[in-house]
Length: 450
Ligand SMILES: *Cc1c(COP(=O)(O)O)cnc(C)c1O
Image (cartoon, rainbow, N blue to C red; front, side):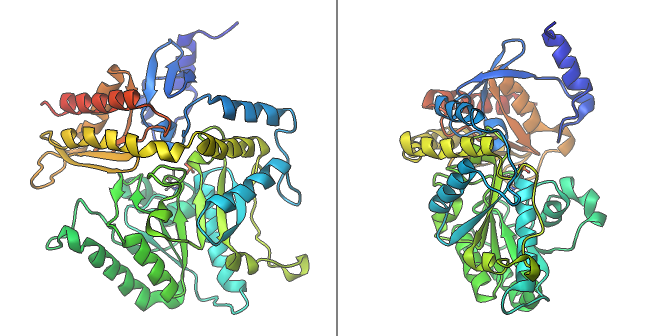
C-alpha cells in the first residue's frame, strides 16, 4: 500500500532528523517531485525553488539532458571505487574540470560533500608542507575569516567562524588564526566604503607578516561569504589575498562550494579578480544539484609533494567510499555540457539585472538595512533601525517570518538569521524571478509591519 500524504508528513516530522532545523516547531513540507524550478509537495502544492534546493540546483530540476545522462550511466555502472582504480565517466569529468577552472589547477580529488572537500584541502595543505622537496614542517596553522562557513565536519568547523553554529564545538576543534570579517555593510567606525579594501587587507598583511613561518594555508570563500548571510567582500580583497599569500609563501584555498558554477555571474568567483588559488573546493552546483559530489582541485606543485611510490609513504592517506561516484560524475559532466549548449552564462546578465531592479525597490523598505547582490546570490538584511543598523531581537526571527509569508505566495525561501536569502537556479526565467522577488518583498512587508 502506498503511504498517504499525511503518513509521509508524520514520518518526515517524527522519524527524519532534519539538519539545521528546530524539530519541535518543524512543520513538514514533503516534496515529492519537481518541474523545472518548481517543487511539488505530496499534497500537490507548488512552490518556486527560490534557494536552489539549498544553493545547489543550477539548470532546474529534471533537466532532460542531465536526466538522460544519469539514466545512460545507470546502464553502465552506478558505482565503483576510486581507490586504486578509476572510472571512464569520472576521468572525463576530471579532465573537463581542469579545463573550466582557473589556470594551474591540474589534479582533481573527489569526495561527496562540500565539507569533505574542505577537509581534504586542509589535510593536503598540511601534508604538503611536510613532504615537499624543501620541507617546512613548522607551517601547520590555518588562517580563516570571521563569519566563515566551510561545512559541518570537525575540520571544516574548525576553520568556520559563525558562533551560533560553531562555538559549542570549540573544545573539539583545532586552533585557527582568525581574520576580521571583510564586511562592507557593517564597516568599523571611521572606515569609509572606499577604504574598506585597504583596511581589511592591511589586517591580513599584518597577520601574515608576523605569523607566516607557521601558516600552512589561508582559506576563503571568494567574493561572498554565503552562510554568514551573503556578506560581500570589498572589490580587490580576494586579489590582494592572493598577492599576500604568494608573498608570504602560504597556500590559498578557495572554497567555491557556494560561489562556483555561475552563481556570481562568472563560472567561478575567482575569475572576477583573476585569482588562481593553490587549492579549490567545489560542491553544491557541481552536479547541477542532482547528486552528492565534491572535488578538491590542486595545483601541480601541491600534487608533486604527494607523487611517490608506496615505499615513499608520501601519498594522500585519505579517501571516501563514494568519491568520484560515476552516477554523480555523469550528472556533473552533463551539467557542464548544458552550460555550453544553452549558453547559461550569457543568459545571466539579464537575470541579474532583473533581480537588481527589484532590490532597488526593496532596499527602500523601512526595515531593510541592506539588499546586497553578487550575481544570483542575494541577501536582504532586516534591521530594526536603518540608521544605526540595530538588529531586531533575534528571537523575533523576522526573516523567517518573511520567508513563511513568501510560501503563501508560492515561493520557497530559507533565511539565515535576519537575512532573507534569494539564490534561484540559474535556469529560472525572468517571470519566475519576478514572482520570487515580489514574494520576498511582500514577505518582508508582512514580517516588519508590527
Ligand atoms: C555549503 C557550503 C559548504 C559545505 O558543503 P556541504 O555539501 O553542505 O558539506 C562548504 N563551503 C561553503 C562555502 C558552503 O557554502
